[in-house]
Every structure is written in C-alpha cells, then in structure tokens.
Image 1 (cartoon, rainbow, N blue to C red):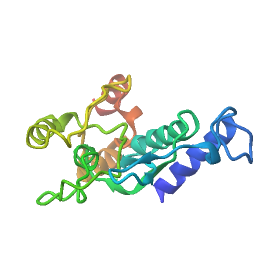
Image 2 (image 1 turned 30 degrees about the vertical axis):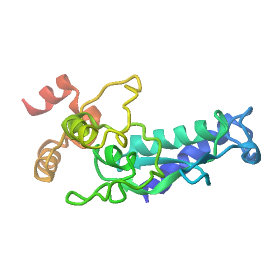
Image 3 (image 1 turned 30 degrees about the horizontal axis):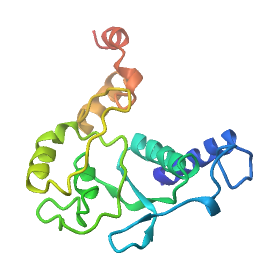
Image 4 (image 1 turned 180 degrees about the vertical axis):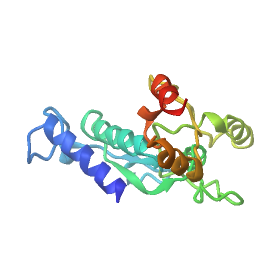
Length: 189
C-alpha cells in the first residue's frame, strides 16, 4: 500500500511540474509517441528497465529516474514489477540474473531486462560485487558513483527497544528526529 501511495506522490509531483491533466510531467518533456526503444540482443525493441528496492527513497528516486529517462532522454522505460529485497539485489538484477534475490541460485546468464538502479545502497555488498565482477566480467554492472548524498546503511532498532522507549518516555525511535542528541539526553537522563 505504501508503494502505491509513494508512486501517487511522484505522479502528483510531476503534475505540479507540468500541466495538470497533460500526458507529460515536464513542460518540455518528450511525448510517448516520440520516445525510442533500445534493442535486445536479437534486435527487438524493448524499454529501458528500472529496478527499485524495498525502501521509500528507492521507490521515489527510481520513479524520478523513470520520468527523466522518458521525458528528458526520450526513451521508453518501465519499472520492473519485482522489488529488490536488499542492496545486493541490483548487483544481480542488472546482470540479468532472473532470481536476483535468491540466496542459493540466482540463475545468471540471461540477457538483462533491467538496466538502471538508483539509490541502491549496495555499499555493504562491495565484496559480493567484486566477486561477481571477477566471476562474470561481461555481466557485472558498472557503479557510476554517488548520487550526491551520503547516509548509513543497515541501522536497526529492535521492536522491543522501540516499544520500551515509547512506553517509558514517549520517545519515538522510529522517527529520525527522535535521535536529536540533546533532546534524547534530556528525556533519558
């Protein structure tokens, strides 16, 4: 449900950029009828595939990338219906691994239908990326670098601690502003 609402927010954002009710989000966007396809190995027209992962920023930023691919670059593009379960998912999805989230058998070697992933948070999976690139040098995707912001991966607070903090002091640890150090110190000590 959250993903549907987030996609709706992206569409509404696009409508505020372009004209409400128009086919395009951007005033000078490339109309769908003028967009180009890329070709697969057999020469068939296919859209550029985009994979998103299972967190809100990935949904938002991949939808923004989709809009840019379509309306700025002028290509047909789609978001793959499968959602990556971790930051490692794009490593394998971009290489054409059919079961990119399967820990045991990823079924790599097929021609990829997924070409783009942004906000992947794959930093903790650097060793897996290097190993895959060594084993499958022709399939491994190239990391194009940072999107311009940094963050922390894999932060976790257990449900027990989350509920205990809220019950004890009303501190909502599931909301980032609760981590403001001076406020936290005032409430706890």
